[in-house]
Image (cartoon, rainbow, N blue to C red; front, side, top):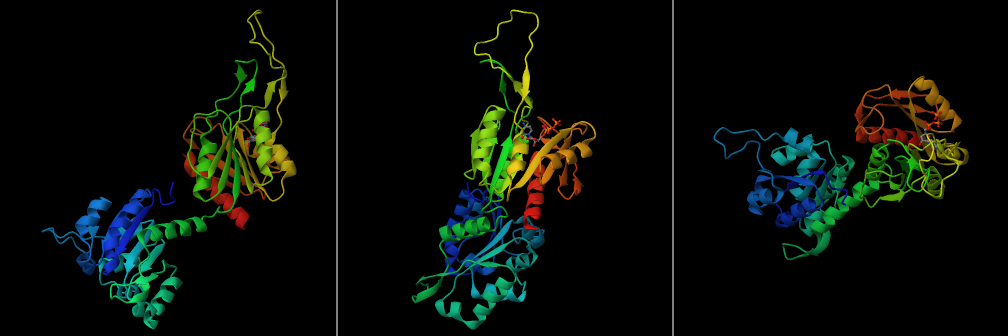
Length: 403
Ligand code: CTP
């Protein structure tokens, strides 16, 4: 899946001959899973028709401050358009438009949108070789770079003038892969390995029965997805659940019992940077596992249980560089119990869920959590979706490991 999937891409087209290639560019963005809107300068319409672009993008194409086709002129809101976008890609970007962008001119809708946009702006210059080298163009590149805009350099080749040299707009495929690489390279968890546990564990009583719990695994899977979206390599060790996820950055290790989970987690912890143990691991397991199905011969049945290994505590004992996070599900004396666990298990952070909070805990899509870190900072959150809780948690971890 492309990192561009689900992103809102605003494509800005200016009046260069390379504008004819933007039909392919729109298609490639859409193929990557992004939503595309197009804004173009009035002169760009001489090179490619708005009808082609609106058909491909499935959105109206904007090129002036008002909608000219309407008797009651409607204002095309450049502020809304700029704020809508997750990224603004100006391709082809002519010397004229780049010069205006670098000087704050706003005499067309594309330029006004550029000034209003808060998202990352990419520009792919396209011009003749002497224009590309001209000091005033180089000055535009420099200024735009200082503004934080990202240049997708032109390539060398035959130009519309017939001359051969630098100034050809990068090919649409290269523009898309340049942006994908740029976004990936800037993700906050790029290069980090995150080990996550999720779901319940099943402790066998006999070949057909087990002791388990109602954990759905949702919280752990949401953390895995959020970590992958932030660029991490994720190892997700999960007990039996109905959750699934397909992401090339997430490697799923299915386990059944607490002992399986312990063994699997220890295989990967040493090479991990962050450990987040959200699984609801059984605290006890049957001391003996019957080799045959237990028959109901008597009126009562007594099972002797013994403690499982505490996976989280075992990682706390051996951790070095790793940032270690545990979960605590409490019913009373919540803060004190959670703080006690944080210390006892040598954690960097504990996520407290209180069963007294409506919408928190097992099986729900929401959770209400409190973070307590090893400096005893306590941050309490509102009831949120588990995916929002996952992002809050990872943002907290990132702020701690970057500090
Ligand atoms: N945990 C674990 N291995 C276990 C038990 C728990 O890794 N065998 C982890 C959970 O994934 C979670 C945290 O420890 O991150 C929860 O601990 P919890 O079971 O609530 O606390 P305990 O220390 O077992 O204390 P108590 O049961 O008394 O509340």
